[in-house]
Amino acid sequence: MVDFQAGLLPVIDDGVKVIEEAAWLAKVAEALDVPVWLTEQYPEKLGGTASGLLSELGEHQVWQKHHFSAMEEPEFAQTLKAQSVQQVVICGTEAHICVLQSALGLLEAGYNVYWLSEATASRRRDEARLARERACAHGAIAVTSDMVAYEWLHRCDNALFKDVHQRLLKPRSSRVVTFF
Image (cartoon, rainbow, N blue to C red):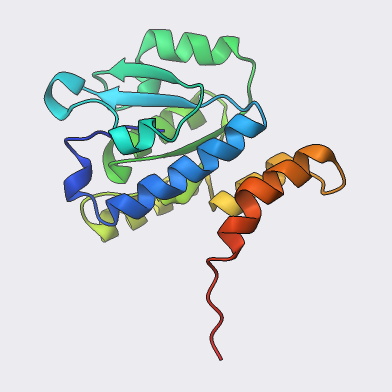
């Protein structure tokens, strides 16, 4: 989760919805023991991660950075490499700056990058759209929170699925509006 910072969110297009989507997937990640990492760009100036997001998170790690790409921060890159992961789901603000530069850095380092579309935004919607297009042109894959959640769950016939479905998936699906 890239730079969901208190000083930045008030000017982000659909900032509240973006935070809600990120928080929801973070809850699924927590249930499945998927690590959640947050970055903060120059927090002395932009503030820390928005309290509304932090209050929704379980276990997580926060990385402070001054480069636009998190991969340019040596400790971040080394620690990620030590995790032996191949796939990274990325989201955050601003899409066309820090999220894009981090995604490109991850791709260059050989990671499979999944761009969480509804949890990634900029001040201007067109910049977020163009950032996603550019990241995907370089090999990232655009996904939604539901796509990621069900891929992580993998199957529906076990206690873990039933728990996550009851607590997180089912309440979410009740928000779907049907048009006639």
